[in-house]
Length: 163
Image (cartoon, rainbow, N blue to C red; front, side, top):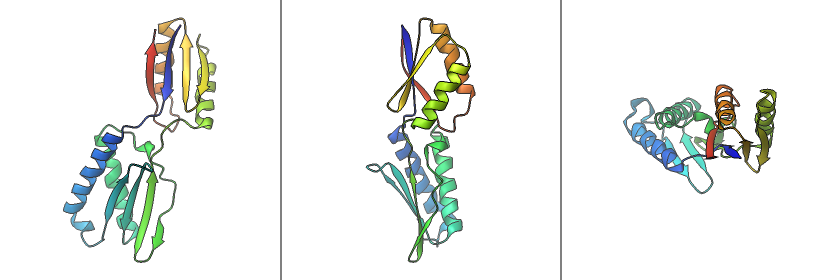
């Protein structure tokens, strides 16, 4: 039986490249010159740490990071932007966790969506990924197309295509 996995994997090297180019832009930005801004990638904890004097400058940093991620062909939704900035002393801090893997709720949404499409495939949740199997490669390709067209609010990739 043919199968593939629906995953949410990140390429840490591309994120590193995006952060480095954001840091280079930060040095040249006149509007952020006196804001004592910092951008740092914490690879161990998989998060991007931002620091600025004011919330407006912090928002500019977020915009710079998101634009650099997009230029590296990374979906900006890999960052968790739901957390509020933390004021500490003279600075505002914000940690942007990098989301990897598919959480259980999203996996259930993907499974129910595929089942609602009435395709001849079997779908199962395996840890932080969704496995789709079928006897027909055409059915698998049709499933991929339908999943790509739907927005699950998480960047999804297709991995391990086996026939």
